[in-house]
Image 1 (tube, rainbow, N blue to C red):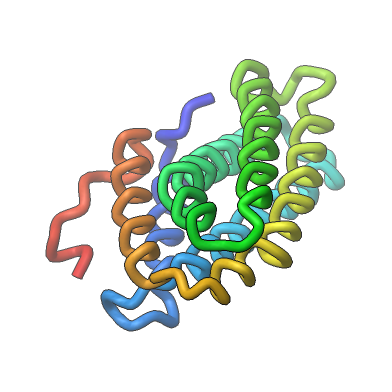
Image 2 (image 1 turned 180 degrees about the vertical axis):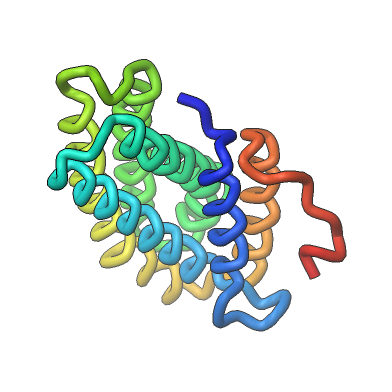
Length: 187
C-alpha cells in the first residue's frame, strides 16, 4: 500500500498542526500528543467502518486503510523508541510497558497483512475491523494505566513531547507523507 497520496499528505499536515493544538510553543506534553494520536486513528477507523456500512467502493476504503497503517506504524515507533523506555525507567509497574510492546507486535502483524493485501481480498475489511478493536483495547490500557502512572512518576513530559514531535516529523518525511519541514515552519 502506498502512503504518498495527497490525502495522506493533507492528513499528515493536519495531524502535525493538531499535535500542537492547545500547547504553547515548546510545551508539548508527551501524553497529550500520544492521546491525540489515539483520537485521530479512532476517527479513521470510524470513517472506514462508515464506508463499509455504506458498501463503498474499494478505492474509497483503501486510502483510509493506508492512513491507518501509516499512523499506527509511526505512533508505535515513537512509543517504542522514546516513550516506553522513559516510562519503563520511571513507573512502578514496568510490566505495563512490556505488555504494551507485545500488543504493538500483534498490531504490526495485522498491519503487515493489510499492506500485503488489498480491499478486494475477502478478509480485508475484517482485518481492518479487528485491528481497530485491538487498538481500542491497547488505547484503553495505555490511557487507563500506563499514562496515569507516567504522569504520577514525574516524567519530563514536555521534553518527551518535543522529542516525540521531532521524531514524528522525521518518520513522516522518511515515509514521504510530508515534505521536509524547515526550521521556520516548526517554530
